[in-house]
Length: 351
Image (cartoon, helix red, strand yellow):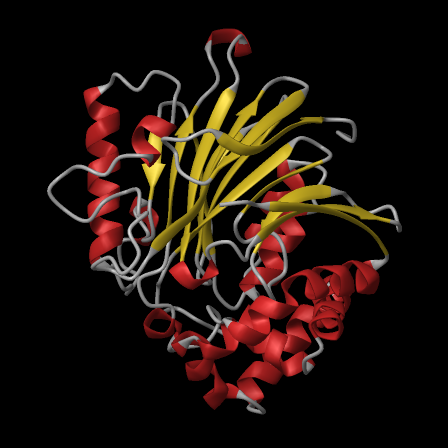
């Protein structure tokens, strides 16, 4: 597989137009044919969707302008892009989202920071997206934070994996709690976090109680904290990562044990298998030893088989090594193969 890497600049609308144009063919030919997208159509024109849009505009008007640009670049109605970005914000989203999800491994820095902290991430989604996603290096012209992110056609950057100019890394795991409310769309939230200059600023966003839904966020920054964060609509719990840990696609923190959620078989199996591998040791500081695993008794962590039993597919795997002043990143088609893209972000904008 090839993975296109584009560089774009401009104001929020111009950035969105460039992102929309890049993803336009896949949005037209793939997204519109997905059952997930078709299932969203029942929310078109309804008050709940309008309220989520309104809350998102009040909180982050620039990011909603970016979303408008994506619609213009994709040559489609804004409501199409709004619906697609709100796919996890609506009350039936646990069923709409199906079995798609991701797996993460976090390895804290070595003693005294001599070794970098590491985040490894499998980006899993529908196999039809294979070869149609892209990486964008985004350089806003209005002084906002620039970043590099893996992008899915029609969606705001931020909900997959990325690193910004302040050396802040974010990777995302989908979760499926049933605690939705009217508020800021979760894809807007992840895009906002990717634009933060510090994890302290990111925490302020994730601790807001006016979010429509949420994700699990894996966060690290050059010279800063190393966090695993569960942030459903009903709360936010931040955990300092002090030992290797893994996360799949359901809430696991003690503070959320009482929340009703959907736990897919794949998520349960990947979580158990990843924890088993970490407990056994032997992976060293290489998250690919977990993310590339296809063994175990249940559904596999690495999902590179089209038409697999759970419908999910590993589109890409990323590894971020977070040192004191820079982040080295690599993106793989398959954890067992060579990197397709790699780079180094010097943390030039830390406050």
